[in-house]
Image (tube, rainbow, N blue to C red; front, top):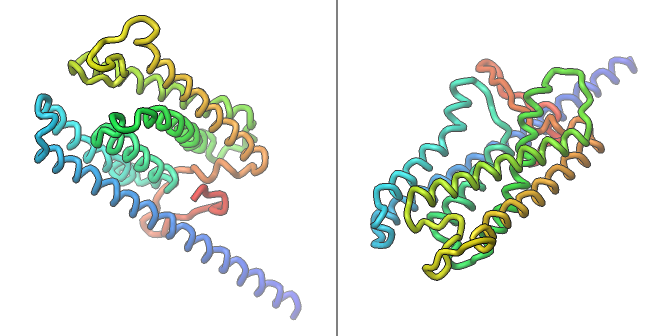
Length: 258
């Protein structure tokens, strides 16, 4: 009789844990959809504002294409999920949308750089941290279902190198845009209408890379500490397969960053 009661208690406890996991996952999805809606609204506003605003008409076609392209890019994660029947972690999607708002909408479209000159520095540091954390999604994919204990030092180095690589790609983008569009000044090589030369012309690019390296290092250290304290830390970034017959399962959801 006692054994039956114990089995019943264990079953009830398991059902309660599953219910709590489902609730946490539902909250994460709701947060993801809310942030997506806000991001989409921001970029639609950017298109409308650009069309009715008299400023920036010298490169009207490029500006319009750029803003419409960002709206399309917002849907790429959803398209990938549909095609490959997978589900990115809510942390991944939310982080991506927040980065789009900060870097593209606020930074570029609303031209916050002209009002707050240190916005670019803050953004490079925060984005470096963010991409360092998001690199864990790749680790989760590569080492899924493999009985390998990941070293905290490995996570630190991977997060750091991945984030620095993204930083380098972004600087290439800024250089390319400046080369194509006269006076765009993404690399801040023009001050008060005068082109800088020598070390002064390199200051903004090198500052961004250094700040990015610091942010990447911070992300790597945090990932290493989390992995050392919790061996299931990486499961929070897992990209899951979607089963149409069953809801998405979230194993080890207690480790989720959200």
